[in-house]
Length: 522
Ligand code: DCB
Image 1 (spheres, rainbow, N blue to C red):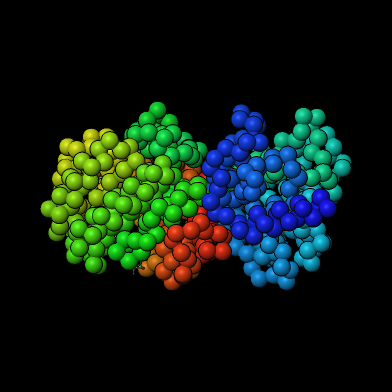
Image 2: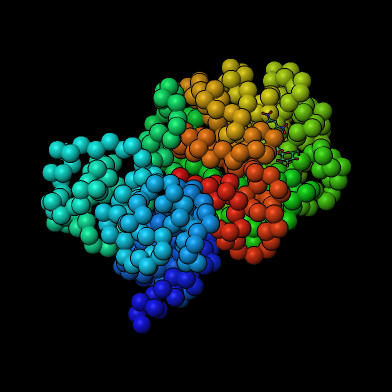
């Protein structure tokens, strides 16, 4: 009976696979406990949830299905069709195919899906998923494990690797207890540690061994939290920091064009994004393409509604003057000054709002002749109303020419320069441009990137995207992903037809969306 109830609860709970994490504290998660942060991070990024009664049940043993599903989501592995109708069968099948474990360890027929996963198997799956190829040192690490001899031989390299990477530390007695189960609190802690470790050091599969320039600054841990935690942002050196001076990394979604997909800039869509762990939202207000220049009143209202909804969710929010077909920002500098003057006044007391004054200059727009003079004018306009706000400045070639800005930056405080990339088009060359720019002291913000090619389709390129995100994480660089919409293109985070006004499940997210939502936490 107990097993049945437990199974039922898991089905009820996980069939929904809510993307929205429980942001409220769980009554049974002890404040200040060793696992509190891990649970908050994991639940906050929607990787696992509490129970319908609001509890988290940290001491409860995690099942094989739950562990594999959570790890898959964390690693960006999408479910594939499977025989079993179990809620997690698609994840288990995908994990099996990815070689995370062998057929006999969790038979795909399903009879052990809901049984506790042995710790040694959990560690193997975790290492295969997030830290493949992690080195292991038999002599050094086995000495740390008092019950090393209890380990099955097929697991020792993974367990040693996990000890070596600091993912596993053993219990108070120095035992690993390889055949015991894992509590939900322990599972959260392990997955979080492995994920962080992967973001910091793991080479992406298939990555070229050619070393990229190491980060010029010290690596920065993702500092999560929204406006209520970090307050007014300020740029110190090249790093975005909170009001208290501690580094902050913002991660979240960009809308598609408000004039086309404004429905996903509504309260519930933004709440879903925040619930998945984002602390940033970007409101892309096209100027051309039927946007602000054609219908200023309607677009302004839409942009304000979106910014207000993001503020309500405690998010930082980028107000983006999305020039694209109108490639030279100087062409409409008067309209831009009027718009940003109005907005900077409206939001002068709001630490949430970040101003992106020109999405992607292109065509003939030059840094020295057009973009820099434009930026100087807009910085002046915004500063007169909102002296503390962070301002993002684009560059030529769709905001890829940060080397030109680095050589000739705009004068002022709290200015950052945008670098936009699409993982299927842009790679190591643009990354090294970031390192050079940082080395020259230029603060960089990735206010738009996509898992697709530069045209918004093709791919998706998730391995390349992971390489990029790891690179950004190591440097403490903030990002917004293109885009939160259901357009039938690979860069879109939502499957066609997804309603904007209800909570989303994993099934609503595209492969890109699943990957990106799993990376808000780092
Ligand atoms: C940027 C734009 C953004 C555009 C994406 C993907 O453009 F800021 O607006 O989004 O990157 O191309 C796409 C949408 C499509 C839509 C199209 C036109 O995804 O649904 O139809 O905008 O509104 C870039 C970025 C980089 C490069 C070129 C473009 N590049 N571009 O490196 O060549 O030409 O749009």
